[in-house]
Amino acid sequence: MIINYTQALEVFDNNEDFFVEVITDFLQNEFDVYLDVFYSACEAKDAKLINENAHKIKSAVLNIGAENLSESAHKVETIAKNDELNTLDSLLEQFKREVIDLKAELNKYLENR
Image (cartoon, helix red, strand yellow):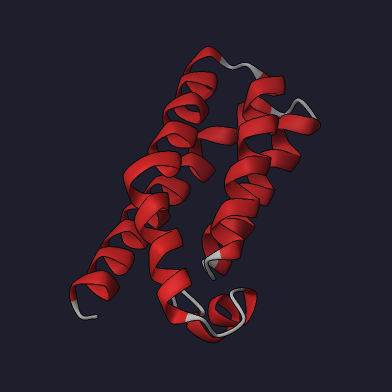
């Protein structure tokens, strides 16, 4: 399951209109900004910046019910915190796939609303 909609709606007090507003803004604005900074930090092997941005992504996606991506971001955060960047590449591939899946799922949800 890419998104736990039950959990996500609980975060928004079961207000689906507010949830839609948040995920629309999330897709149009903040998520890509987080990802750009995160991927740049990964390319630069900047552990501190990777850690900070993985934490932001982890929290943001958990708020919208994307538990698997949140867990992957947590793993990246831990790797960066422990300065074990040599193990990051394989996890990044999974992370990128989960990002693509999340965007597709959210867009599908918005289209079917």
